Length: 159
Image (tube, rainbow, N blue to C red; front, side, top):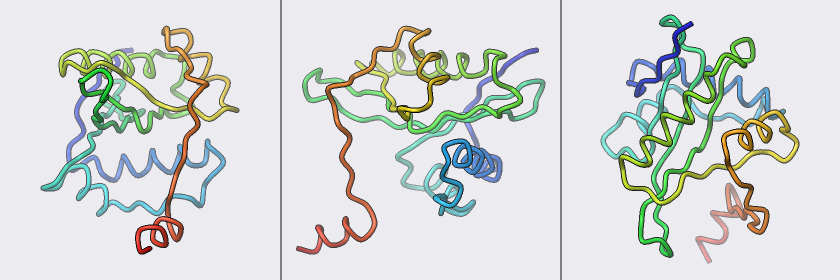
């Protein structure tokens, strides 16, 4: 089977939302998705795009996706590529699709002169952790993720 990775286009918004919802179910958060097709069309393909998406296809059928953006490392003085989400449909795992997406993103990071390619993984997702270790990724256990969102973000910003 031939795996192809391509940049997503606006007409992929429905497919991207489908994969986002599948990912939410896999991550045990099926009710956490508030994203819409219109949001995806605007944020990934609109006038002020700050994030990008890839579609992974096998024999012309979309079987996975990734969303990524660029950040900046003050220590390296270089941009970094941050992988927000990667998902391959459960029945298509094990065929090299995830590795193909990761290689595509690694090459993109190199092409864009990035000093880093980073992402996070849930601590219980052992299959993903094992996969990331198999491609040479190193866990950064000394960092703790912090987040302000929803009411907490609004409250803090208004003080």
